[in-house]
Length: 252
Image (cartoon, one colour):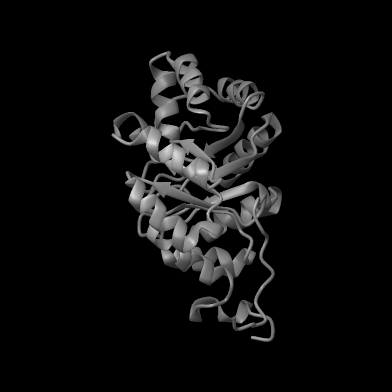
């Protein structure tokens, strides 16, 4: 194989440079195809929203991800619904029954008091690797002040979260992004001033957003809500194998 001077890239299992993939309803065959092409670049898969309750292939798909050593987490929306219906204990029991080691908690849609969310993170962290999401799913342009982002991220990490997810939605039109998809650069600057970037998973579903974060934070930035068909494309961005990030290559 051709050897080139490429950026240093962390190896699996990763704590940095995480690629978090959004499975919106893949078939087992599609899972196999994705892993055949880019399995070495996938660190965790989220079964988006409440798809775990609606899909017809849940057990088979989880078995296939398990076979390939790729952890799975259920969508935070499912957690929010369970909390709203006072069924969180049932959800926790089901996640354990499914053999999942990760748990996502968010409050982008429901109203969840801060102290309650922190208590839940601490409680869930006793049994799971917790991803907690910060930011609203509102894509109307409503802005949460940067200091609130920082305060929430730091407190949720202190409560026991492995990573905090910087909300961007599947379409990259909310949270850390403007409705147009443009990165809120001032917000990101404020966050990075006070929070360790290696503890943040930035939603970045669009190519231009991925390019921005890779250029800003390097090959080992944690990126989430990546479409299955974009995993290999993102990896080439991380490695400086596309014109957008060619300068990352050593000697480039």
